[in-house]
Structures are given as C-alpha cells and as structure tokens.
Image (cartoon, rainbow, N blue to C red; front, top):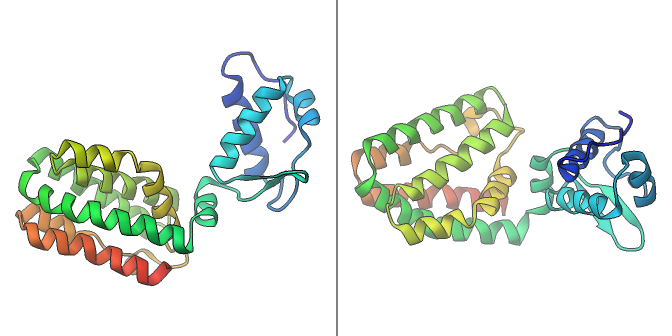
Length: 223
C-alpha cells in the first residue's frame, strides 16, 4: 500500500492510519525497520513533527518500537498483540492485583446498589463478550470485557472508586488483552457468569468472592 500525501485536516490521525495500514497489511513486517523520518516526511507530505507524533502514538499502542540510534521497528500488527507483547510477567501481575482489589469492593457495592437498568447493561455486555469468545472475535471480546468491568465498578455508586478505576481504563484494557488466551475456544476462558448472578441477586459477599476468584485464576495462569 503506497503512502499518499495527506490532507491538511487531522494530519496526525491520517498519518497514523496510513502507517497502521502499512503495518497491518504486512507491507512493514514485524521486526522490520520502517522508512526513516525524512522518507516518511516526503512520502506523506507533512512536517517532521506530524510524523513524530504519529510514531509516538503507534509506539504507545505497541505497534512500533523506537530504538535510539537504530531506528523505529514494527513490534506488532495490532493494538491487541501490542498489549500482549508489552504487558506480561510482573507488570501484568501488578495490574491484575490492583484490579482485584478495586473490583472486589466494586462488585460488593454493585450487588447492593446497582439499578435494574445497570444490571440489564451488564448482562448485555457479558452476552456480547461470551458470543464473541465463541466466535473467536478477540478484538470484540476485549472491548466488551473491558466495558463490563468498568461498568461493574460504576454500579458501586461510589464516585471515588469509579473515578479511580476509570483512570485505569487503558491498563485494564491492556491487561484484558494480555490475559485473553486466543489459543483456546470460548468455553475455556474465565467465566463472569457467577459474578453477574451474584450482582443480580444482591449477594454482596459472593460478588466479592467471584470477583477475587477469577483474578486469582488469571494471575496463576498468566503470571
């Protein structure tokens, strides 16, 4: 896919999309160094700062890796695989431990304070997550799973707790991506059905136990 001169509106976003396209299409394979900055500036018809911002964004997403003095290399073909590559071991364990602490209390309070509308939305998100797992549509699994967890904590109706968790959304999504086992069919993934039922039934202690339990399972499996 040849790079094309961009329009003036939304230059950085356009450059990001073109560079992402070159990566996902395989034009820039994983492990290969991308064209140097002067070549990108010429091919895209933008300034150096625009190219640098795009490279920074794609590096942050895990698709590119900047090696000082050596150039910029393709690290992954998607944000999902990028998250898996950059979050593992100790880092993943620490994020899961923090999530466990916040979500256990969030689940306990959600069982007490959730509304019928919130329960309906939680149920919908979990159904979408599980259906995507069965179909092995992993990007959808990650989106729905992340949204489920964020909403669960919001259902606590504890503003500070919800805000703390909201601030971790990026780390939550990356940890979800890193802990989804794409080599296994949907039935072998961690289930959230017990947690949903506890929240539905208003069983605060069971909700907290269910929330803590699946994090223990993830930590044991991936860390």
